Each structure stands twice: as structure tokens, then as C-alpha cells.
Image (cartoon, rainbow, N blue to C red):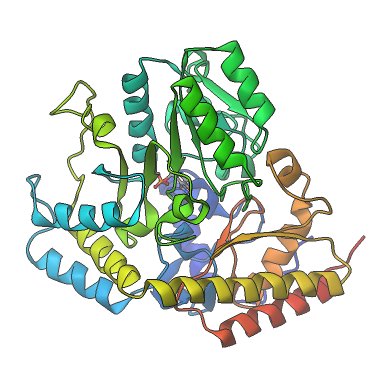
Amino acid sequence: YLEPMARNLERSLALQKRAEALLPGGVDSPVRAFRAVGGEPPFVVRGAGAYLWDADGNRYLDYFGSWGPMVLGHAFPAVVEAIQQAAAKSASFGASTPAEGDLAELVVEAVPSIDKLRFVSSGTEATMSAIRVARAFTGRKYIIKFEGCYHGHSDGLLVKAGSGVATFGIPGSAGVPEEIAHYTLALPYNDIASVEAAFEAHRGEIACIILEPVVGNMGCVLPAGGYLETLRAITLREGALLIFDEVMTGFRVAHGGAQQRYGIVPDMTALGKIIGGGLPCGAFGGRAEIMNLLAPLGPVYQAGTLSGNPLAMAAGMATLQHLRQHKTEVYARLEALSAMVADGITAAAHEAGLPVVTNRVGAMFTWFFTEAPVTDFASAAASDTALFARFHHAMMEAGIWLPPSQFEAAFLSTAHTEADISATIEAARNAFAAIEVN
Ligand code: PMP
């Protein structure tokens, strides 16, 4: 169903061929391979603001922002300068640096649930380690996660996961022992009855509920009214911890993340993406009584050679300082521009007679090609992924790079302009007109 490429992708194709001989699938992270949408993944050589350039010189307007971190756009001058200055003083020490405290202060000030935190190098490590602490704190083994939520690729968290796991239709992962998956209870999102039933069946055995308070990894799915409040009440009643995975939503849907936007304070929070300004960085945090269980104070072991890396701290600092200083304008602008593009494309799809359901919270959104509201993984999975693939392909041809799967959220940055949004809507209008509906 894909038309031949109009763009010249000669160099990207050659680079892909070389990469396939060296890296499984030619990639270091599966969704980069464009398997869900078909077509060739361009090899990126440069970014500036809202734009990317590929190896053949094609320019794209970027709507995935490195999957979330680039909220200020690519090569943001203050971030570039901070990384250069830090690099000149050495890339790593493996000893404590002032930068860790500097960035920690900015995170603690912004995120309501965090009194103390530990830096790691990815979102995967952040959620994995938060769960270890939650198990130690409660002395319980089971965890609840939700179908279509993705919390990184650690063994216990791939059960019915979103993102690439959903994109490729893999029911978890090979190589994970059943005994480990056994302790993960995967329940439908936005369904309180199944949470109550799980606590009924495993009373006193559930350590925590972990969730994306706004989901990005089955496409964007919003918490139903009262959902987060009820999860908070149930976990308090049952003595289990509530963990918000704000790797995507932190510093994006509001300065203090989804917990600030919805006014719910979890026990622990996982962060990543934006807090590292595009460098490898994650963090997990919570109340001091919980976090003090970590070694060297307590019995929970967790460590990292490059944790709190000076370059990552510097890029994170430059990003979070800018967000703090320009909070009001930044989040108002992200909201307004995102509404404009989300609504504009919805209207264009409707004009073309295509079914589309648009979910959006702040600068995080998805157009699902389906009729019914999308509130959980089952309703997201009802989307017409072939139609999405054609839309994606047509947009790529027009120089608009959307996330290459129906089950991923799109992101917008402060570098996007009104003119960019108008061009995007115009491209979508043309794409929809060209798509034959059968
Ligand atoms: N949690 C969420 C909500 C995520 O979106 C992701 C990555 N997309 C992760 C965890 C894992 O983060 P990383 O890829 O940095 O390991």
C-alpha cells in the first residue's frame, strides 16, 4: 500500500544496509526501524530547533523530539554550551560532583512527591529501581502494572507492555522467566474494578501500583476522571505504594508533571527524558523514609558507574533552569500550539471522512484512526494501523516526521512555530485527500 519514495534516501539506505550487518535490525532501539509503518528510516545527521536533517539532506519537522526529551528543541544554545563547558572539565569522575545536587534541587523543587532522589542513566533503570525499593519498603512481592503502559525493558515490566512491545504485537518478551513475570499483575488501564479484584485476590501481597499517569506508550491515553484519585485511595488503604512513571510526562504536561496537573501525590516517581536534556539520564525519588532504604544508608542495593554523569547533569540543568525561569510562557505555549495541531489535523481527517479520535494532554498527543473513544489498550488496539501507516508515510514525504507507530505519542517543543503548525495541518489535509478509503 506504500507508494514509491519521492524523497532521495540513497545515503540513508546505504547506512541502513551497513547498520543491518552490525546491529540487530540496524538499530539500538526497535521502534527506530519503522517496521510498524513500513518505509525506510532516514538516518539523522543534525537537528536545530524543531527540525531534523537526514544524511541525504532532506529536512523534517520533528514531532517525536527524541521520544520526549527535546522539549526546548534540538541544539538549544544554553544546553549546547552547558555540555561543552562540562565536557572540557572531563566527561566523568565516578566521584561526587556539585552538579548532582544542583539538578536534584531543581527536581525536588518542581515535583511534589520527591523529597530525595537518585540519578540513574535511563528510564528503565528508574522504574526498575523504584520497584525494588517499593518491594523492600512493603516487604511484598507482587506489583500491579497496566496493559499498554511501558516502563522500560526490565524483566518484570514487559508483561503486556506498550511502546515497541505493542507495536510489534509481542506478548511480553522471550528470555523472561515465568517465575519473574508471575509477580507482575497486568490489568486494564482506567478500570478500577480489576484493581479491587487484584487486591482482593492478593491481600497484603501487593507492593505497589506503577502507572503512567497520562499514558504515552499505547499512544496518548488520559486517566478517566477520578481514576488517579481512586488509585491513590486504594493504595493508601491497602498499604501499597503508588508509583507514577513520569519519564514521559515529567516537566512536559506541567512543570511538576502529571502529579501537579492532576493534583495527586504518589509515593514514588520515576523520571527520565527531559531531566537529562537529551543526554542519558533518569531518576527515581519519593519521601525520605522510602528513599533512605537505598545503599549506603539502607539494605536496597542500586548503583551506576555513570549515574549522575557530569554531562547529563549539565544538559539537565540548562533545560530545567530554562523551564523554571519561563514556566508560565513555556507551558502556555506548549498547550496552545499542541491544541492547534491536534485539533487542526482532527478537523482535516473529518473533512476527508476519516474516523479519528484525538487524545491530548499538553504537548503530548495521538491521532487514533478509530471510531470509539480510546481509554485503554483494547480500544487503542482497535485503531486502523494500516491507515496510520499510510498517513505516516505521506507526512514523511511532506517533511513531517511523526512517531512511526500508532501506539506512540507525538511531542511538540517550544521551538515549533505557528507557521510550522499551519504547514503540518496543510500536509495532513493533502495526505488525507490522497489516502483512498476502502
Ligand atoms: N517509562 C516511560 C513512561 C517511558 O516512556 C519510557 C521510554 N519511552 C521508559 C520508562 C523507559 O525509558 P528508557 O527508554 O530511557 O529506558
